[in-house]
Image (cartoon, rainbow, N blue to C red; front, top):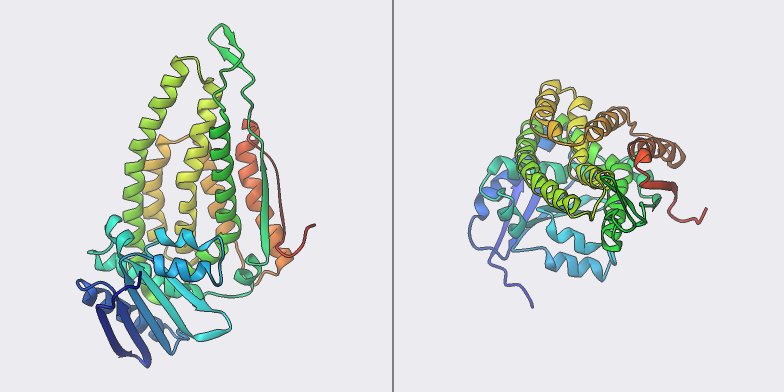
Amino acid sequence: MARKVKHFSLHRIAGTELRVVSDVDAGILPVIQEEEAVIRGYVESGRWRHQSVTLFVLQDLQPLVHQLQSDAFPGRADVLDSRPVVNVYDLAEPSACHVFINLETMTREGYWDDPMSVRGLLAHEHAHPLAEGRTTQASRELTVETTAELPQSSGGRIGAVERPECSGWTEDRQAAIRQALNLLVHKLCLYAPREIFANETAIRSGFGDALLHLDRRNLASGQSSVAIRGDIKSHLQRELDRGELTPAAAKDLLLVGDLQGYIDLALEVAPFHRGGVESAAQELEATLENEIFRHLEPEARQTYVALVKRYIDLRSDLTRDELRVWGNGILDVLAGTLADKGIMSGFRIRAADTES
């Protein structure tokens, strides 16, 4: 069904033409004001490349998903519909970009009525094309293959009783864990350079306060999800009590959940270190330590610390082969965390256009 345009306006901001198109009829002006502030900030930083920006403010991103599924990103575009802001740009044509704001997600996450969050999200998305370079290009030329082998439901000991089918690693659970690990590995290894350099570019361009505000909000959400983790732990305990799960399997499942839910925060903290804003990095890490990591499996914190160090050291001029070496270091961190659990046994990084 075609969307009815309820708002269209044209603006000239520091030499950039800003077109605003929306199927939303209320609350548009504050968003436009934040977009204007972001454009001015990047122009003043000397990093701005665009001559025109089209800002779409939509009820949801289904129109974008539909377009990309039939065009540039078959089979992948549907993941965009849950994101609050998306920047679509052409690497071969840096004079323009198209920014899409998802009202549904923005409202659900509490961003819509928070101008500083809107500014942080827009600054981050606009930073992506500005942060493009050799390493980010190389990240698109590689792919990660993982082989996640999980303990089989071949029995275990509950107390003094040997139970032949009590490990708790059901087929559905194994499939979910494999999918979670595959997504985690791709995010921390190949998508990470794009996120790190975008965040660093935004921080160095004067948007550190806005990104810090966003990170504070996200950490507050992380603290809330720790309470949900308690519910999961209670559920696993009930399985233990019924003899359907071994203590080792319960601990493994909690660890995978902790890794999936929290260690990608390294992508938010490392850019503040890289950008020289140590006060922000230290504030976020203190919150992580005091409010989140102390409630998780200890391996989660250890993995986070190792990742931050490697993200701080990431160079922006890596070739494909050099990035493969760096990426293997990230995989080594994850393998070291999971090796003793018998969860992940194999992985490799290869060129996306080869089979070797």
